[in-house]
Amino acid sequence: MLWNRPLLPVIKCRYCDKSDEVRLHGKGRSGYQRYRCLACKRTFQAKYIYNVGKQERSLSELDR
Image 1 (cartoon, helix red, strand yellow):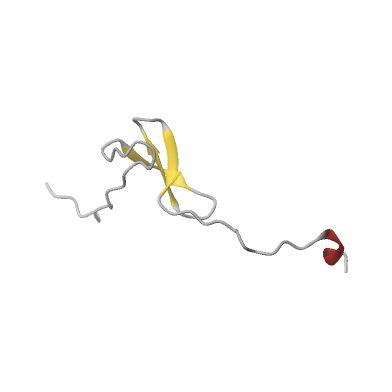
Image 2: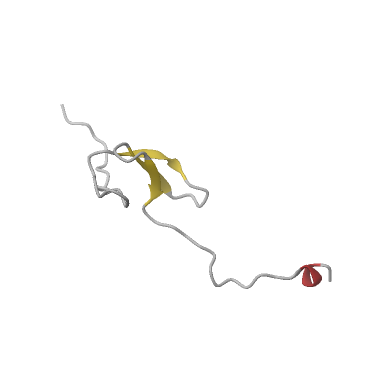
């Protein structure tokens, strides 16, 4: 019997390159899907967002 579910993209583990052992593992703080590799027991996301390049405000600027 065929299920009417969308096909998920094949995700390879970024650490051990296996794709048959990767499972869904919730969502990250950024909202992106997290994955867990059962072969190497590590978790990862397919896409990461970093706040590099944003200028930090000093405490003296926040007091104004």
